[in-house]
Each structure stands twice: as structure tokens, then as C-alpha cells.
Image (cartoon, helix red, strand yellow):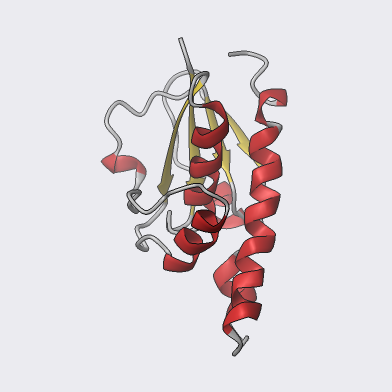
Length: 143
């Protein structure tokens, strides 16, 4: 039986989608991973682009809230932004909620005019999330 986890962010547009992509890429045999947001902001195209650069296709993912997930029973819920951590909904059952915050690439890139500089903000966070995904088993000892 695979461990069931949810990656929760504010808008389910960037960080949570990248985390789901990495976790599914590395651990789909042991982990059933989904992502959601407190709100729906739509899938961020620059997140899709930088993930595609490293061979992880998240283009078929879509922005959703916890209310859009059928049977929201999870072993772990990881919040990847402060807003989601502070506004995390109640999860029935044994879900252990863990905050592992990452900077928001759209905010980091907001005032940058050069497209490569903007993409570098997304790449930086993508690579940080990759390290989290590679080491996620350290959190999942109870699964």
C-alpha cells in the first residue's frame, strides 16, 4: 500500500504542482501524491516550462482545491507556503501536517524584465523542491 500525501499551497499553480511532479517522478511506486490549493489560481506556465526542462511533465496537471479531491484521506499533508500553512483546512483522520515552505517564484520574478532572470527564479525554487522530493522518505517513517 502506498503512502498517501497531499501537497498544499495557496493557489495550486506553481510550488505544489512542482512538488507533485517531482514526487511522482521519483516515488510513484511508494507514494500516491496529489496537490491542491486553498484557492484555484490556474497552472503556472513558467512552472510547466522549467519542469519540462528537467524531463518532468506537469502540463496535464490542473489547479484544484481540497474540495475537488475525492476521498481526501491522507497520511501526510505538506504545506509548501506560509499562507497555506496558516490557513490549512482541517483534515479528518490521521493526516500529519508538516510545513516545508518555499519562496514563491512569481513573486521573486515579479519585477524582473528579462525572461531568463524570471525563469531563473523558477529554476531556483524547482531545484529546492527537487531536494525536498528526493528526501521525502525522511518524513514518511510512519507510512
